[in-house]
Length: 361
Image 1 (spheres, rainbow, N blue to C red):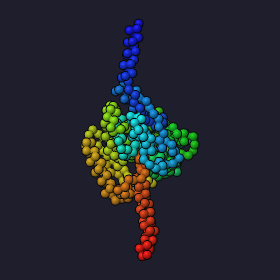
Image 2: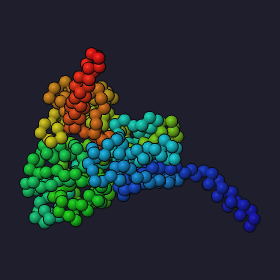
Image 3: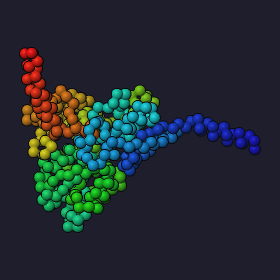
């Protein structure tokens, strides 16, 4: 009996020694938690000896819901607080919607894995009052219908492709947006990422899928990105087990280009739009997937050489203010640059007389 007790204790101690706890950072929303648990589930299949604990974080993007993202300012609105946990060593990795990640990650952090991508297209959710009249598409909505979105890309595309509608900012997680649509009369429809609704168990609310060949989806949309410290080789090795190469390569090319992969042929399509949808410029290039960086540079060069497109880019020597994930809005860049230049000229003119006066004195 005594021998049996000692044996049980020894096995328990051995199991405890073999078990490792890994701390994971996640946003608090239902969708963020679903994605984090999905990543953990995949990792546990490859590493059953590891216990994962989730630490929930509030982000600026989650807290400030009464402003458009371009009015909030800063970078990484949905990632910064999670990244602080990583840099402080309080978590080993953080799980994000890839489209929310900044173009350039903070020093010492890297994209450790990109999971297999869900279908990336945008979806339309129609107000129940219209569905009661068999209206289930944007084309069928009455003139001056209000469409809710928080994305500048969607805003510009809606105004370009559906000139009979108006666009109004809507913020919040998917449950909050649905509530704002269903429980009031402020919106006739909302446009969202289909993947988020499907992952959140709300796929049955999707009324229309927008053709990505016409309504280009956001770069990284539908993908889950896992961020970790660049020096954490153990975590990087662990995350390698869930990396999906075909999803990861297009996402790594550029945060401003839509991509498709057919075997080894990679096709990049870049669309630059004025915010009001009045002008748009599209370029496409194809080539070997292993020459992705060169293809991306060639595609960017085409847009830079297009003088009509160039005016919407503003200064290429400065960081553009205001995309969705990095709070940068291509359509606002030229206006911001022009405003800054006008301010500088005004200041120079104001200072000029006083300088001449001081010189003469």
